[in-house]
Length: 350
Image 1 (cartoon, rainbow, N blue to C red):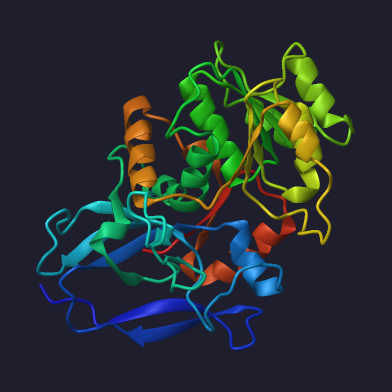
Image 2 (tube, rainbow, N blue to C red):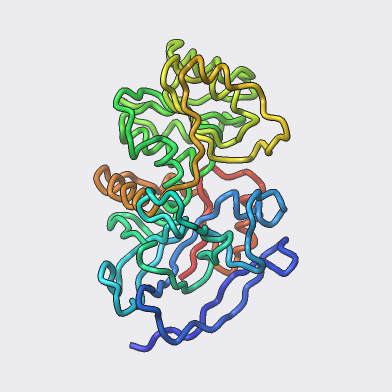
């Protein structure tokens, strides 16, 4: 079978403010460690639009291919690749450089940022940065794993589970929060999700079960949402806060924690990056809290998550808010910017 020679790729424009579709040649040969992938579905993250509006706090390559989360099948492998074969369904990992998560000094790059991402028909990556996808999931579902899924996994400290965890609070109704809620329900941890929309909260509550309900807090109705979280936990507080806002929400995040040993996983930067950090150190010390900075995760974290999903057969379809065609990628980005979605926006590639 002859290999594809060209790929249609979306790239950031020269001014970095939009994306454009281009056709580019593929290499005629693969390196010994490389794998040629056919991309089937891509899901968006807030960082993808932040790179276009100038609010993303990290460097990105000029005219790079955006997006980090994809479902793909293996088309061909390099001469030394033994872990994958043609036809395998895989998900590229977000961070290329961290395989086990124990590499303390390894340099790394992230898909869609300082490394060409996945919003294209074909991509070539080294095999050690790929994971096998659960067989039961659709391509749309698999495409939510790499950034949102692994971030949720590491934010909940699932690689080192807190055996006594009862409650976890997620800020907002984006992909990380919804994925985290699904993991919590499967693990028997009661999730509490915040939003300014009662309609969105009702959608999310439907993800719960009789034994593990999903609770919601409207932070416009409850200005003291940390106090409401304590009320919902019989004043005990939550074990984990998945902080999607950033430093500006740190004080409230700590206020919502249980009295001893809770974790605040700082994931996002929606609230901006202030010049002066609020005085939250003393409350954190009082509660012996761990403030954990989350940088998505390693390839191993992603494979651990895939194994957990397969074990519990977690349905990820509720994560998918809307699906766009490949040619309509710009409209998908606009839909993400609108904030009208709950969960993940997916682009169908092939």
